[in-house]
Image 1 (cartoon, helix red, strand yellow):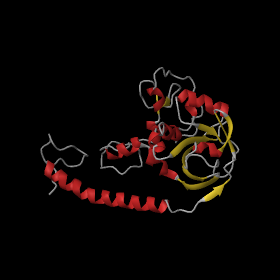
Image 2: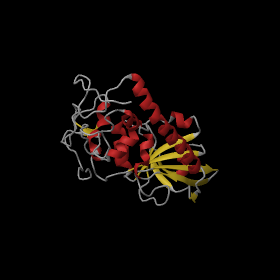
Image 3: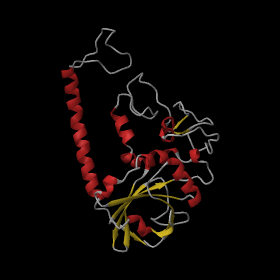
Length: 260
């Protein structure tokens, strides 16, 4: 039986009850039943995802990368499967003014070694002009292959902000899957770990115990000054940019009318 201790040295106001290890284990085991059901449902959804119909499109449509215009087929790098992150873009914005959410997602996708080991290639596509994109990629220190799909319609371009999956059969190319909304969270390991912590993500929408620390808007995790203080001031950057050696303050935030 779970009880709330009356001893003020163990009871924490606005917090879950403090219990002994055996009581904690019983509660944890009860939650494990739900977690296992969640895992099994996720497996079933993945099985259904593998059976979605496909859309064929022209793989010779050109996108622009570091070597100039290339057919979309080149993004497969000779492999049969391809995952693409479609990175939103604000024309003319300075580096620190690009999409905070896309910055976060792309930062968690810096290394495709384990995808490549399963014969899957990875690339990032965006609608920015290549000269702006190339400058941004250099600034961020990204090593993934980036491409501009400016003015490209259909599955090779189209709406940005999503993860998309493609299959190749010779020179035939098919769209197999695309995320929507919060679907990108699957690749953001930091969010998954935060979901395991007692305070969670620290975002205002979360269901938290009464009197738990209040969260803010999602932007709190994406902008800070050089000292790590969350800010939208003139010297802020998306947080990952500060982790790089030699990162220095910037004097203009650029477009800040897109945050909530």
